Image (cartoon, rainbow, N blue to C red; front, top):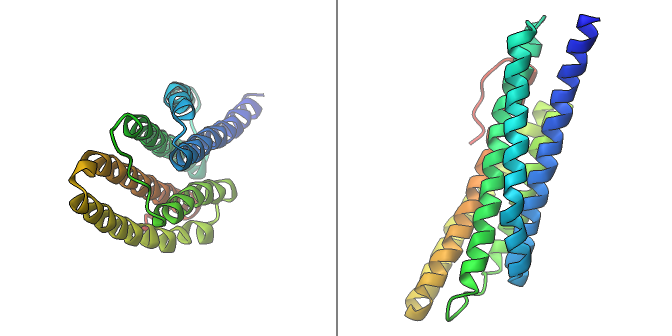
Length: 219
């Protein structure tokens, strides 16, 4: 009976983490869409909903602490899972924060006297970052090292796009000094996307450790 309860609690941890991952993916997708359409109503909702992500993260952390305190993990793989869930939940919470940052920049940018049109490459960067978040959670679900490794190539492309976009946005600001503040907002968006991609590779690293018990860097 005790063992069954423990097994159920372990399964619930997985499910709760996947739910948190889904919440974060949706927040990032909505933030990206709000940037594409300058939808300040959607941006405000994303900012408001961030509290729900934080609550889910804290609840998951509390459950992992309770599980460690009340149930001695029977095998090393269970302990790795519990610690991986805690770490991955923290990475997801930060990705949620980056979605929040993008939404806040959308709201702020629309209040400025002039908007900076997002350069075309930002769409590729945003799509790739969102895919990385999804891929990292797929790697966790399947505990698949190969899927985790696939994040490296995507992360390199995101880094290249960040450099390209920074250069384009700075050049735009130099050509039109009235757009400097709006350009800074756009650079913040680009940085938030790059950081979300980095957090996805961190999740991939946790998956590799979970599956193999070996530490490996993906970026």
